[in-house]
Every structure is written in C-alpha cells, then in structure tokens.
Image (tube, rainbow, N blue to C red):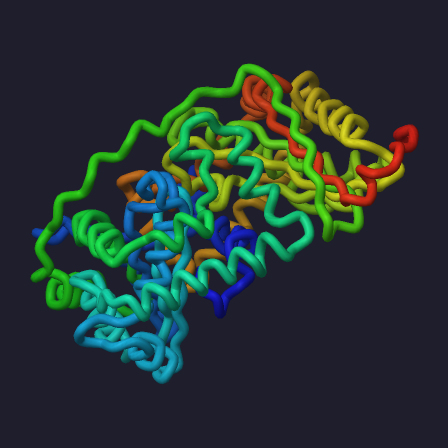
Length: 465
C-alpha cells in the first residue's frame, strides 16, 4: 500500500471484504449487471453499468502477489506496486496522480497474496485519461536507479511505521502466517526483509514487469456511468495494442490442513496488554465448505453480538476485544491457503490458556448444538447487508468484480455469493466447525508485553459464568 494511505493492509481488510451482489431464490434480490469481454491480447474486461451518478470506478488487477514473488526477494511484489506510480517514458513521475486528483478523482494500490490491484475513481469525463494512464504503465515503466532507491526507502519506512514501531507489529496477519504455513510461498513475510529489498536491482524490476504485468495476466474492471459497449471500445482503444507476454507458471503452493497445534510466545516492547492470535486454515476456494465457514466466522467474531465477543468480553470478562481476519483479504478473495484468524487483547490478570479454553468452549457449543434459526438469520442478514452496501460504491464494485474474475475466473460469482450465504444451514456450520476449527488445525501466537515476561506470572483469574 502506498505511503500516503498508511492504514495499509489491516485497515483495508474492511474495504477488501465489502463487495457482493445477488442471484438468490429471493425475487427482490439485487441482480448486479455484469458484462465481460476478453481482448485479443488476453486482457479480460468486466463492466457493471450504473447511471445513478456521473462517476466511474476503475480497477486493474494483476494476478501476481506475495505468493509469486521470487525467492530471496521477499516484499518484491509490494515494492513493485510502489514503482508503478513512479512514472513511464510517456508520463513522468507525478503525472499519474496529478491527472486523476486534478480532475476530482483519487487512486491507490495494494498487494495481497494472490493479486496486486490498482484503483481509481473519478467523474466519468476522466475515464479515457485513466485508461490511457493504466495502459501506459502496463506497457513499460521508467526504470531508473533514483526511483528504485526512493521506493525501496519508502517500503522500508512503511515496515518501520506499521510493524517495527507499532504495538503488536501486525503479528496477527504477518507472523501468524509464517507459523501456520509450511511452504515458502505462503509463509514468508510479504512486506519483505530490508536485505532483500535493498538487493533488488533494475534488472529484477524490469523482469518482474515483463513477466507479470502483461495484459494476459490482468483484469480491467469498470463500474459506473458507462455502457459495456462504450467500455469495451475504450479498452480496445487503449489496451488492445499491448502484446501478450509469457507469464511464468505458478509454483505449487497448496497445502492441507495442519495436524498438530502450534503455540508460539512473543515479546512486545511497545504493547501495554497481552494479545493472542488464534488461526485455523480455511477451506479451499470454491469448495462446498467455503460459504459455511464464512457464515461461521461471522457468527463467532463479527461484531458485539458475536459468540466470541459475548463469551470472552461480556461473559467471562477475559478479553478486551475480539476481532477476526481472513488472511489479508476477505472470505471470498483468495486463491491459495489462507487463514481464519481471531485476534484479541486480553487482561493481564488471565492468560492465553484461559482465553483459548473459552474460545474452544464457544466453538464446541456451535459444533455440538448448531445454531438456532433466529441467530442464523441475523448473521446472514448482516453479511448480506455488508455485501450489498459495499457494492454501492463504484470503486469497490469495479475492484471486487476484477478480483473475482482474476481469482475465480468468473466475475458473475458476485451474483452467486448471496445465494451461497442464504443456503448455509445449521448442519453446514456444525460440519465446518468440527472439520476446520480444531485444535490440531490451530496456530496460536501469545504476544506479551516485554515487562510481563520478566516477572513471575500471576495465577489466572477464574472465568465468570
């Protein structure tokens, strides 16, 4: 994520998960208009026509992220995301931002495990300018030592600000994956080590652009005040002449569920209270268990009405908060192994064992007894409301459709997800709770303030009934 948007990955999880539409049995459900076309060079264009405002959202998603970056180049996909804003031979550094913001728009980019996305929103009158700019930097960049050194320093500063000098340091989304996954593609730090970032060369950068930033490895999403015919014609005009480029074959990054619990303790010099992250490997994308696991995750840890908040914060009074994450994206936007992670700050008067025991108790209730109809309806209604609400904004809609097309090969998944949510039963939730939220499939990091590790721990406070 670029330095001027330092809420970065964790903050943008809310943005990443806000995006969905409907193809359900409910006749009143919103059917999102979606049209797709693949150009001769392999670029797929996805358009959602909506004339409710004279605005467009644009997203270009490249099917490359942290899993695909070269070995010994950790953080390279993220570094390259920054370099995409450093100018081209035709549009020098700063032109991209000036053109878009000068016309009343805004733009950004982010890197995840399976994709890198570049997003813009602006009045529809700026659409051609945006597409010209995106096509121009798809062709080539202004590779030079000055911009490379500048962005190496920017990424390192992000690491300092967001990880090294922050309480908890992102341990719930960086460190937990390093512990839970076995394969390098999944468990290395996508932010990158300083050493790997500093040794990236201009040749590395040029090769990365050549290999992964061709039109055949990209999806262009456009949503808003434009017809599919207009959008397809503009895409052909600006992108159609860019030749396809050979993309390296993806490594085999798939791995099964874990078979033994892993527990890790960490020290934190900046934290004031201890924290815990408990993560379980998720079902494969597209499996019959994905939607039930998404609903289960919402039931357990989405908001103050969730089972874990009511059980750990309100009931037993062990934790100060409960939050949840799906890797670095959402429960629908991943293409390889990912995690459902529960993160909580807990009281110094208790300990990680007591917190985990309470989490296990709440999971066991669901696994053994299921979910009553009223609760299940409430959870589904909230998930659907969040999904539809996210798609209202053209920027989110274009980005979501482009990501779904990239990861699923079909943007129309956006109109199926609500039906998948609606179709989840109590028995489905019981099944996935017993299959995935097991102790053997769990990885835990207990992050304690450094001062706590230098004193004899007190006896845990008994949980309140």
